[in-house]
Image 1 (tube, rainbow, N blue to C red):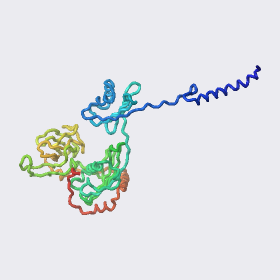
Image 2: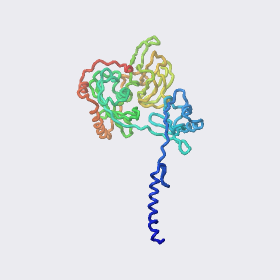
Image 3: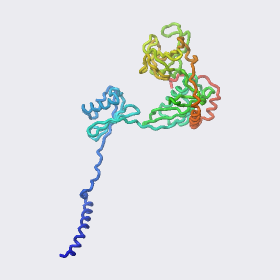
Image 4: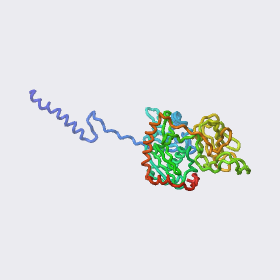
Length: 433
């Protein structure tokens, strides 16, 4: 055979090889040598959410989800670096995840509403990391006209965006802002009105992480009181009127925002001692457990049992002023003699200890050792903004007050409320709302 006779056969070999590979690719279950098999399906995973119940230990919850004693010990020690397992309260949610039918390889522990501890098993070891719960920031504008009390105001604006019970919390926040100017249990009248704009941080479940006012306008008995939050160089936010005068005074008007059940008096019949004696303070009819706030900055001089006062706290302030908070059900965490406290800081909870016929807070104000009526005593005001801040404040003020234009369709109603003749005081029992 000549070399020319071999030519067609040699030329046909590459073509035959290509045809063979193509046929192999068409046969089910076969593939050319060196080709990658299709991706294997991911194993199915199960997710279980379990809640720590009253009286249940964390180890019990883990054991019920498949972990043995050694694994529970390893996980517990890992959690201990971030939070003591015994301090996890009933209601805490744990999320277990892993391949179906196998021990979980991921555990999420809810440390608090804003952070989750993520435990995961990889390369034969458990690892932990803290993840922040995401949130979104939004702005809400709202207005209202008082009918019987601030808690039952007729609302307009972005009312549908309020979370459950959020307006009640908002009222307490308003009371805190104006605590140096208005007693919300005594000074609010029918026809008064308000407009607010506030910023919120909202968690995925709809709960509110934090809330901060951007601007407030309150019309009370013909006067207009505006509140603008502004931070000076120390970055602490305080509230000012439109002229830069602080709303804050040296002392709060009241330690709890509830109605007065017994006022300051030189002669009052004591219901337990059955005799007439001075009542050198103010009684507030607040529910059991209501947080009690220090009305001014100072140093705790006494905290504990105190004769007829029951559980009580005394604070020494500047200018030889002392305040007392009596009949408490509990002393605030960390509150003891010698501790410095800030204005508005919680120092205890309302109760009925000592010589008390029922749940209430007894509050006293002493100046130079003499009891004074907390409602009428003259106290110094905070100084206004310094000149170096005024230009920045005015710009901030104008932008903030512009936000109130979208607070609702009160318009003429707000003006009418400002011009209306004050009516009789509305019932002050806010505990019923």
